[in-house]
Image (cartoon, rainbow, N blue to C red; front, side, top):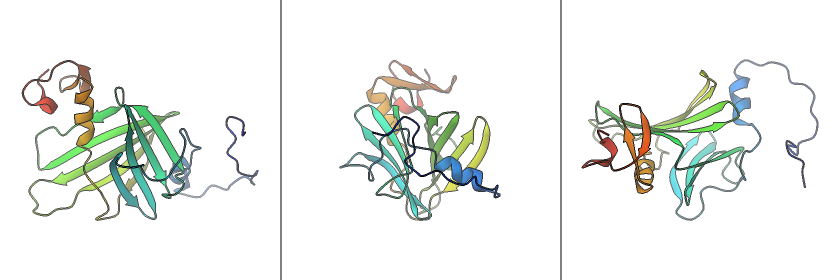
Length: 187
């Protein structure tokens, strides 16, 4: 059994600095959760291709999992409880219907977003992931055109099923009833 922190890779010669490689390196951080293929069964909430790699968000009970990398063996997999995960629903205003969900890992955040142009007939959903170290953006990756499976809207309904309501004043989820339109409560 490997020791904690053991990547399973042989020792390597120190790498030289290459512009733009820091962002790529962050996506290759050792796994924070068990890796596997794309979402099992019907647990997929979101998926897309970024270059030759796949980005998946899966649900297993009350846990969401972020996976990025080749479908057969993701390079990064993060799991967070649905109850505490940072999710920003569509505000109800503007031309674009945008949602985001953010996974945390050792000082880095992975904000997956989806956006849909409500006015453009037949417009595809666009999406991607923004990787930050603290507050500094280190990578912005966009999903390949036409590969987004669905918007991130469903995560809001899952949080509501837990009894949560999004409070627009504090930009946070809280326990309690949401009123007539659950996602746009005036908590």
